[in-house]
Length: 176
Image (cartoon, rainbow, N blue to C red; front, side, top):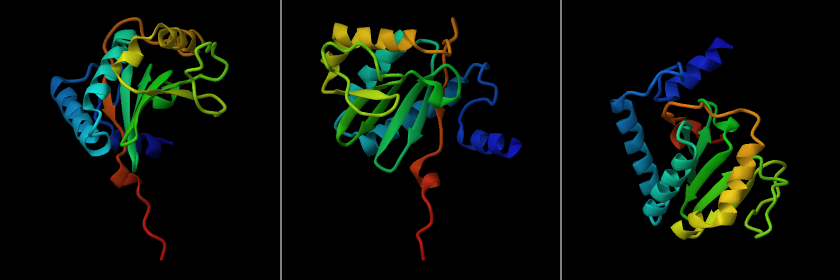
């Protein structure tokens, strides 16, 4: 069990204790990493990524931003701690565009039919532009998802930006 924790700590750019505040230098480094991910995976959408991050941060100021890079995209999960899978909201950015993911999204009241996907828990909304974030029906969906969340967000403090494993470290060796 300790081996897994050590492996996770190697790829994280945050103190091992998630309750500790993130240093300014670590925050700047993580923000630079995110800018590089935007350049690599969503070069046509830097303003939308920034606007969406600000919008989510305004709604969840104490959430940790857990960043994962995959081969064709990156995902930022807004979690209560350093476990991205516990997050209610996530942003997925790729060459195709930006999507906002809600977990749990299945079963949310969606009279405007914004939610897409057929997963057991998660649904998503494609963000065409920043004006989508101003829609009242989107805010209602997010509020409903947050109300169903079993793990509360901390009442105070600021969440850290945590960079997890990148695509290079996730690649498997080619089969021979």
